[in-house]
Image (cartoon, rainbow, N blue to C red; front, side):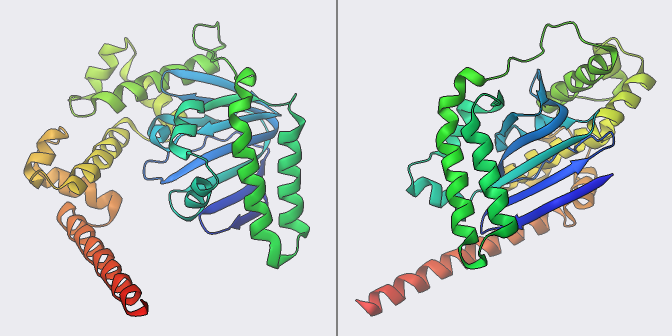
Length: 304
């Protein structure tokens, strides 16, 4: 059963609390522009990032660096109750910077899992956030919630002693072993998507039966192997298109696509526009932003 206790959006900051009592695997998110903090109130979760796996239980906090999201997944297995904070790379982060908080440096240095059961100020912050969301005055709610989140962020560097060590190298049960193996393959794909020619190649590389590999990968990662490879190609393709240095044919070749037609097809299936249409939309957006800057500058000069 899925139960959402609350969900709020405050100009660049999203907060939600969810309770689940069934097995659940959170899907990987390839096109995010948010930093995340997950606070587990109760239950047990497994948190994967790069080659590492961390065990989470009630009273644990996870920092998710947006740059690592394509390689990050939360795996279910037990009932759990958690709060999720999502901070977008715009309004809220700009406010944080004014307060002296460097989001890029903070999440890059301190991403991972922390056992904060012995840090009561963390639990108090989340309690105040929930109280404000459920019972606070509407006209003051956004300001007070954002203030509490900024307090939380300012405490992160002091939690280094609470950092949870990964399960890497430990003896694990068969369920965790299966999840680790699937993520090992996923992590390899993330770094070699342009070189992989077939699923048979992956199965041979990791000494796994092809059918078994396909089954556990889909079960754990929530994508088929082909879908996962293509999602990485699309994410990298978007970045190359934004850079504007290469033709579409060159990008398709760099990504390991068999042809430009194939690149067009997988890109449109995911993004709902072709690569060329996506490039045109980017150019139009950049042009609009430049025009707005010129208009603001003209207004400022008129005022002076």
